[in-house]
Length: 172
Image 1: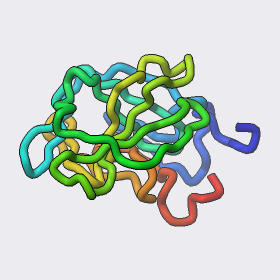
Image 2 (image 1 turned 60 degrees about the vertical axis):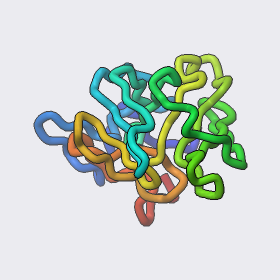
Image 3 (image 1 turned 180 degrees about the vertical axis):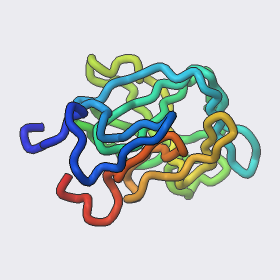
């Protein structure tokens, strides 16, 4: 964290200025913050709806589009199976991955933190989805994926960047 020059208190010169009704990812905090989001979030795949909620938690972190975490009660978990691999987030802890049961050899479409670090306990068991691998919607707007493959941020009309994952952003 000591190497991180931006923490949501000051926008860098290269950051785009948000317009009316928009947010800059450079105004998001570091460390990240969990914020309840009452908008309708729907996850769809070719077989139908996988999840639908108005109780998502939005994770805001400097330089990244928000991640959306959905309560397990609002996810049809029978359509998911564990995927191989784990990763570690300095803030949230160890993540496990999930893929569609209908595509047992497919790539992971979701992840979750079964036992996140204390500041992020609200995310325990909640599912986050990769919008580049499965169709994600907020209030009927199709979400674009955060560049970079690994990241799971959700790009919508109401946020501006640039964000981590785009070319030449590795030094952020």
